[in-house]
Every structure is written in structure tokens, then in C-alpha cells.
Length: 229
Ligand SMILES: Nc1ncnc2c1ncn2[C@@H]1O[C@H](COP(=O)(O)OP(=O)(O)OP(=O)(O)O)[C@@H](O)[C@H]1O
Image (cartoon, rainbow, N blue to C red; front, side, top):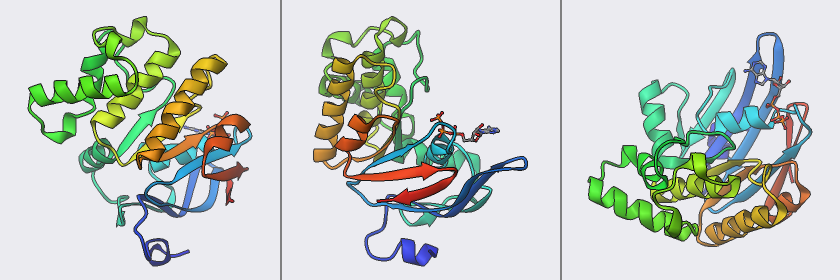
């Protein structure tokens, strides 16, 4: 599929055009084509080691493809310097990863404020938005608590609040219920359902059939080959 074909019609939020990734001699991703339209809720499933996280890192602009193109809002981002990619990432993409970028010793509010680094907002507005986002995810009683003192579910909520406050276009989640008990995991999935209903684009990597069943589309990764249902 060409870049033109991928971006024909409605411009996807993120697209992969013939993307491969190799580590040394090992080819982890076969050429992957994927277009994620605004409002999509996509689950990516597959066996351990099949290449899901590798693809998620490419979608999140945390890594660069060996060949092919990563396209954000219709613009190929591969040639951008690191600081432009970081700015685009901060404004466009939110991350709910197990151990990703929460500062354990800062308050929940401060962590959410950091997500707005690239928004150029005055401090008072950052604080207001951070509190509103924490309220949205059910953490209005934990504004001053630090992630180091929080449960896994609360930490996931801080990460989600950080993305909401930054007004990102797409949320990437890696095993969002992986370390959570079933009731807490269900509450995170409920929150995802609500955010999806509000129009947020979601891409979730999961081993769980229950998580995949919540998504609108399921893609399966097998030995670096992605098959989208
Ligand atoms: N930085 C790296 N250097 C070398 N090999 C890597 C690197 N990252 C991933 N790999 C390899 O790429 C393959 C796919 O890994 P990846 O983490 O993408 O799989 P996954 O489907 O996300 O697995 P899991 O479900 O266990 O997280 C594995 O064989 C892994 O060892």
C-alpha cells in the first residue's frame, strides 16, 4: 500500500506504510501497513515475542523503522529531528505503559502537568487542567499523592489523566490491565470505553481476550506479520 493510498480519504491519525524493524540480523517486523482513523479503538493481540511492543514503539514515535514510513496526520515523520518528533509526540500521543515516564516522587498533579510541557500554557492553567483530568479519571482525592505511593490501577489513571490534560489525539496502552486485579482492570476498561465514546482514538496491546473484546477492531501479530480484521 502506498502512502497516497493510506492517506486517501479521511487522513488517519497514525499510519504505518510498509514499516519494518530489524535488530541486527533479526527481522522483527515484516512490512506492516496500518491506518488508524480518528475515533478507532484498535486492539493488537499476538503471542509473546511476536512484535507487538516493537510496533507500538514505532506508532508512539519512540523508535524509528528500519524501512518504510510512519505517518502522523498525513505527514511522514521519519526525517524529523528528535526535538520535532518529541514535540509532535507530546502534542499527539499519550502513553499508558506499565513503567513509563511517571515520576514516582512527584505529586499526581505535577506528573499530569508535565504532560502539558509542549502546550505552552501558563502554570495556573496547567494546574487547573491537571486537576480536571485527575477528577475525570476518579483521582480527585489523590491530587497530592505521588505515584510511588499509589496502586497499579491508580498509576494507570494518572497516566491516562496526563494524556487527557495534554489533549492528545491517540492513547497507546501496553497491557493496560496486565498487573491489575480483575475489578481494577475492569474499571480501567470502563474508563477506556467512556473516552472512546468521547471520541478519543485508542490503540491497546493486550494478551487478554476480555480487553480485545472491548475494542472496535482487532489486529493480530504473528511472527512480525500483522493481520487486521
Ligand atoms: N531492542 C531490541 N534489541 C534486540 N531485539 C529486540 C529488541 N526489542 C525487541 N527485540 C526482539 O524482537 C522480538 C519482538 O519483541 P516484542 O517486545 O516486540 O514482542 P511482543 O509481542 O511485544 O512480546 P510480549 O508480548 O512478550 O511483550 C523479540 O524476539 C525480542 O527479543
